[in-house]
Length: 100
Image (cartoon, rainbow, N blue to C red):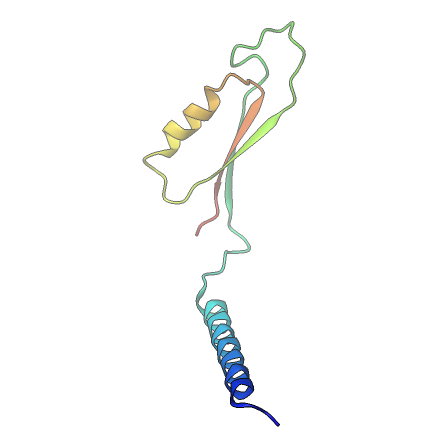
């Protein structure tokens, strides 16, 4: 025989699952999609030695610094200058504007 507790617990579990399903469907409908094309990427390459590496030092591996930028017109120049001022000299800075 099924007890009241078992019926209540089953109902509660089903209600929570239904709520989670509704949240999932709402997120799928309302979240903004990233565009598949039209992404903009700017690459700045600096050769080894541009930031103080002596030519007799062994070449360091290239480090790519990825900077996501969204409405960053005021701060992006200072950010890129700060990244390029690092002691490690063999870097490339990629500023990514995904259009979101």
